[in-house]
Length: 388
Image 1 (tube, rainbow, N blue to C red):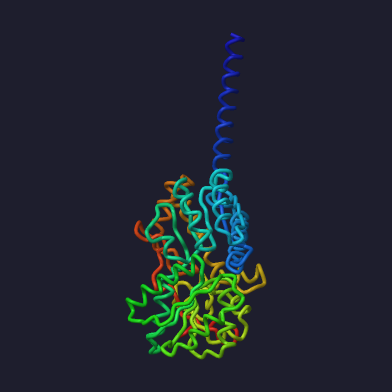
Image 2: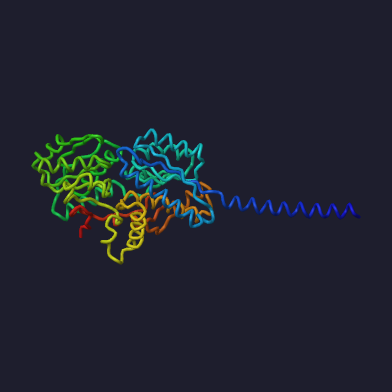
């Protein structure tokens, strides 16, 4: 009888231990981190895009973890700086996939970096939300690839829409010899034909050029030109802007959304006065009408960013915020980090109001923004002003 009692006690103890073990296993599983990888150009020629992106990703990962994570799971953020080099972006993407085992990747500051990562994420089946501008990233649609910024095509459309309002129909184009600049040029040429805008000059410059007066002199001497559009990012457009004023060119000057940051105004100085470009509502948050659905989002984001870093918010910071929030919202809706389910949830994003606009994606649209999400802004007295 004693043996039977001991056996019963032992069995009861073992059952209890197994139950506790199961509970601990479940708790550990529930607390498994959500692994978010990022590749940004925090240094190098595109640093004024990538540096705020890195800051935002780190800031919000920390804020989310302090608030308890996502469905009780902490974020584990791994960020690599590609310095603006596409080969490094590819190498870091491979590391994120194979060594770090990330669930989703947010990043690719530049088009070149993004396109270097695309074949790797497509082959591995890892959701990837790019922060770069070129339309080639999402057109044609790639199964695992999404993006948050407006496209270069949209920028060209918005610029030409504004030209028509001003009675201008002849455009001189100056594009950067980079992934973003090349794609921007292609889209500008295509949109010009559709919009009845005549392209009367087509010049290029190098991303690291310190002087662009030769190309600008050709444009200045072109009697047909009525306006100039510069398609580039980083420091190059600021160099162009300074040279433009030095040559005394009086034609309206447009830039793309690749310079929608106060850093561009700082780099170009007074030469930026009067420059127009399409940008997200984030850069003119206080000027948006109260009824705008973005108003609350961009106002709150601006305050958090500027309080945290003591510097003006930029569009590029917003791109990173939107990318991270879209990814984490998809994790909630997917019920976890199964990559296929997570990919599907990102694609099913509907009505997300972010810093770039209201996002509604689909199987045919992996960006989800319309032209209405763009605002035409102008540099006035060293700041952005909404063009009415």
